[in-house]
Length: 342
Ligand SMILES: *Cc1c(COP(=O)(O)O)cnc(C)c1O
Image 1 (cartoon, rainbow, N blue to C red):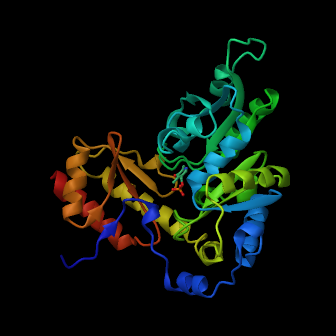
Image 2 (image 1 turned 30 degrees about the vertical axis):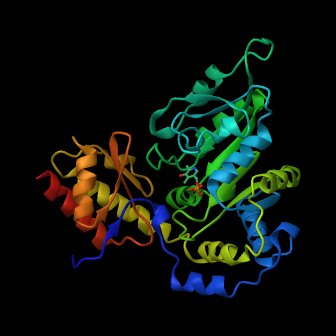
């Protein structure tokens, strides 16, 4: 076919741009495990500052950020972790929270991947009852992935953190798309990460870098996190090559996330006008667009034949905008969905 493919499969599909590749090629590097890679050190300091925490730790993936953080907070003595039941560590990390940290998991309900403070409080255990697991950790996903790219309002976070403090829980922020939330709402990344024991951002999603994520927390927690980084094989060598891509992304690819959000809104508005598509465009706050059709698998297959990549998640179709999808691509996708269902 003559038209280029439109890849709405995920914001992980972005390819490193020329400028990013150039920054990577020219990166100053050293032995990261010994703290001697200047580019990794710069990235860690930069992300710690961006999120308002003392220290940062560069890791190969967001999944490893979640897993190390969970291992840091959970003691393998039946400690319980609270998260929305659609949260990434529950649905997409191969059961690592159980295998690596020995966590009990309690999944919470709530529209759009957002649970309320009351929902959390009602789920917590009685610490005086030795029959029950010990409540230990609550995690928040900003933005919510399976929840539809929704932005946790700072007030909702405050309420959850207040419950956590009252019950002496540890707190963790999965910020795979935290910068999408900040760009969409105008709330700073540091404000969103404030009050959490650990938080992280991903470079390989909408920021457009090929590899990497950075976990932040207190100096003490990050020092301890280094042990798990070593243990899990996340300690690298001349990792500045990839860290340079992440730094370049922070300099060049953050504000532009607003374009992805505008494209996602345009996509949602276009889809809402098609018979046979169920979507509420008002729920599209960032770059993730979920919609329902009678036969999601068949639609995804037909779109793929038209060069439009999407995916089926549960009983919905997901289309994700990112820096390699422009307005033209979004309009083509809307036309293709209309033609497929027509
Ligand atoms: C993608 C994602 C992760 C995992 O990040 P990777 O870098 O792909 O390992 C964790 N949490 C959420 C919400 C995600 O969307």
